[in-house]
Length: 136
Image (cartoon, rainbow, N blue to C red):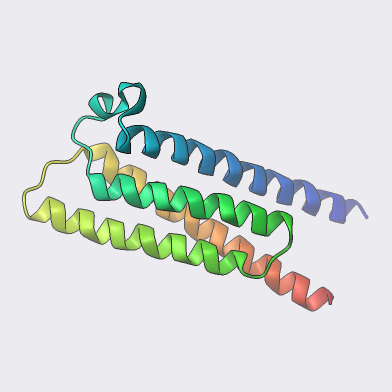
């Protein structure tokens, strides 16, 4: 019984974290894309396609939160698509850097962090689906 409570708390924490992360990503990326609150100038040498890929992922993260809350199997697919978007963006960033494009060094670290976090969410969703399938 106590183990189940701990699993629920961990699940709520992960879903809450994804919700906050998705909302923060949505706010920051849309602020740069639409030049809200002077964020564009504060970001320096941002790479627009990275910001757009983060914006797309923010929507996918929020969709995944809904999937987690309603126990949908497609949540893993949504998060996998998000991971693919980030990987394509990172490959594009690499090409951009190699070809002499300007960028902020923090973008590389941020993308590695975001990709790693998304890998965690994909794995968590996959394991959750597997557990739900075994319980049915």
